[in-house]
Amino acid sequence: MKSRKSSSLNEFLQPVLSGKLLGIDFGLRRVGLAVCDPQGRIAVGAGRIEGSSGRNLILKITKEAKGRGVEGIVVGRPAATRGNDVVTRGAARIAEEIVRYGFKVTMWSEGYTSAAALAARKHFGGKKSSDKGWIDEAAAIILLQDYLAWARGKSG
Figure 1 (cartoon, rainbow, N blue to C red):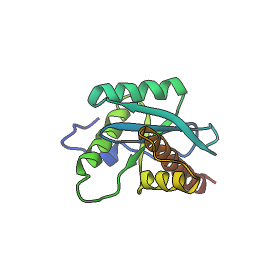
Figure 2: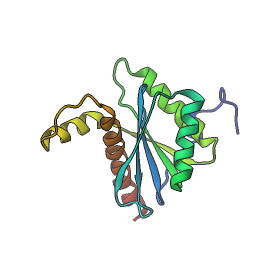
Figure 3: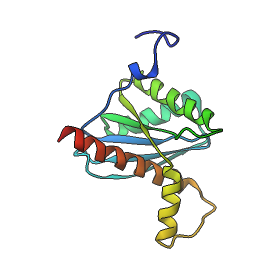
């Protein structure tokens, strides 16, 4: 493997077109998780990780992935907006580190999945909650479902 300084993140990433996947909606406070069935048809919530960062976060994500028997991991790439460069760099770092644990990893645009999760909750009559963690899990579901739709088109 090339050194970090001489390689780009894209050298480590590879599309995962089949099998059970884990979707990650990365945030500075919470990380939302979603998982799909082995046929890649539907994504469901897999919880969230709170209060972890750095190596501890990587270990929790890889433990979750191994425990669920996933073949690949889809990390959300935040939309390029002003002021979110810390989140963007964090998501890229997470993706690069997960590769080092032997998982196939790809990054996928999360394109305002948190806003979509909030809108869906409002549409279906949900109330605002002091527990914002559900947003991250729902955003991970939306992210992974979007990726699965794309992957079906590529593999079919």
